[in-house]
View 1 (tube, one colour):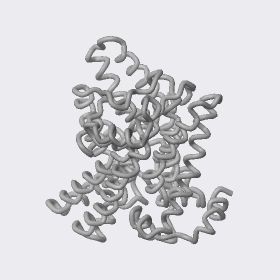
View 2 (view 1 turned 90 degrees about the vertical axis):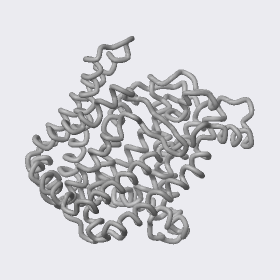
View 3 (view 1 turned 180 degrees about the vertical axis):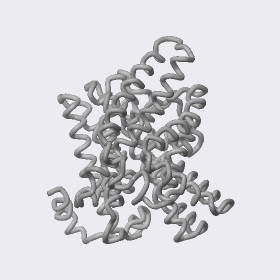
Length: 415
């Protein structure tokens, strides 16, 4: 779908935010190999608990600043992505109707997911196998890969959960045609008072997240076949997705994400709350890791997570509405290619981290190099694959310019 030539201020701000978010995703994965609290050595590829799924490369060089950065992103980033994904669901359903909407979503999400899991992930995780094996051959790797009791998802788990939520929202709209409109009216009414909306979001998030976190722990993942799931968070992500649906159902130019609304005006307050709640979450979570914590400490840590998640999302939306209403050629391209960047970047991250394992460099330098390399290579690849009909169809993009123009295009974007 082509973009409108003229975007409202709110639409432009959220479009720019999408570009910023994909940069944060790339940075988050780029520095995971260099955080202090991960194990000192790489996990064996063929032995549970298969920690290489979360930390494909473990580098001996560490930087504590990356721990703080990754902790904050882990709290709010995926919830924000689900919220942004829900914003334009209602306009799409209104235009295409339920059947057309689902047909579009299945092609848009399931085909790239299958291609990524079957093709991209085996290539991405090969370095994770090489660092702990005596036989680094491709044949031995493929044998070990097929012997795994699951098929690793990498970052692609987001796609199947998003597709499931799209089915749920279309089903709701089919069963109760006025439900989404009602959700939009409620969201608009509450959105004019950001404090009220925030309180409601925190309350719903607490109900969705805290019981599962207490039962399964906040960190537990399960892999079954082609499905990867963090057991404490599926309902939390559903809350944020439907929050996005509600905001978008009444129009994004009014209510919570109005460019001149109360949320944008008070961005500094949301930043302060985000930082304070993050510190509270880190402190209470540290206490849960000391032996057998009391249930009160666990409840406090889980509630602080919910609070930090909501305030982090509010801050980034508020900051984008306050400062992101100007056109940026670079952010526009990042936003337009965000989906393909998300699909492609993990391969470059892992291979670049692997290539730097023996380099005598500070962790900060390594993380920066991996991020920069991943951004350039993923961005160039995303533009290049749009020249191939299958590639353009796979990522839902219109084929771009000729290959000769790709380098000039990238230089123009970053200049």
